[in-house]
Length: 526
Image (cartoon, rainbow, N blue to C red; front, side, top):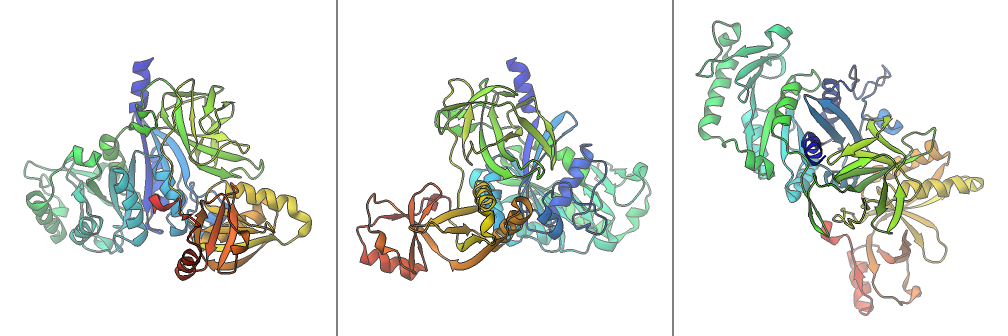
């Protein structure tokens, strides 16, 4: 059994696609699914008129706006590998969901718009990958449009991200004069917009196209050869070790929309991307090929199937093998649970999964049992994986039900959506009014939209602006300290905290009440 389990685990590749909004992340995901045979045709992200939407954008609000606001999970097989893609939200208001998703992968694919280069959100997400030493593969997209010179993009990549790069291929022209890519790794030229039989041109030992070919007559071909020579002489050396520790990024050029360079990228990625890696737990390092099943919950998503009002807990398997019907222990409570309902995904298309191994992502039906960050394990393993990052909300709103008669669906909706972790719930100390906190404004809009569409509950949201949240360590304190500038509330675990109006209000409060110990439990992740 051990040998087969080891071989199964080593055939897994689990990665997240990260980028700034609009860089082409969802389109790239679609094309990869297409090559894996998971979908028959690809829908454009903003294909609102045609009624065809991107497979990974399943939520109503995503279809309307053409953006990803939740992390979708998709699985497909290609060339003997089983691939788990986690498509993350690009929008910065949803970075918390993305950070947690990055804890569940073994590598990341960073998509960069060739006209815009490194954008703010890409930089943020990249830093999380660097912090965790996640190998990063870069795909510079939209070469079918006019963009910045590739050498300039490469220099920016190295300078802004502080990472070495190694171009696996190099563009010959761009925009209207895009001829294709010079494939350094596979030693061939891949032509753009030609018949399949003309797609690849062989190179001789000097790296030039063999025989006479019209591409050789273009100045852009000559320019590409000169730039390749420069890269060979002055560029970084290719190093698998550096890829694995996240200090060198293999760079690919192409166009996801026209499906050019995507297959070449996928095949090369599979060759160099790491299989599932050992994980840190309280018991030490857990080997992914070890026998006992264990994993952690990195995401909870309500209403993936609005008809059933269900909730799914997403589990990254870290060791052993999952079998449907098995009994596991929830580390936080010590409670035993039988896993009889489990699922795998291509966006909202799910199938029951009977077995899965380390590296796979599975969904468990959740009736309120699980929390984000929970560890589950089999038998007597008694393992606990490292905590997932949480972020202190900065924006706050009071929320009430528009229709007093629909309090039941209002409370149910709030409780369920809060468990997904994108918004935090607080209650005022005496009146127990609901206050929601979030990292960004868009989360409130999504909350309002989903309350109406999924729970049939119209809500009224009144902004109370940005606040600084600090938790109270003291067991006893004076509840009368609550004021407009330092509002006393409790979180969903009934722990007391103050929401301060600004830094000045926080300092003033600390000066006046030195005996009160205030903390920010999220500090270590900021």
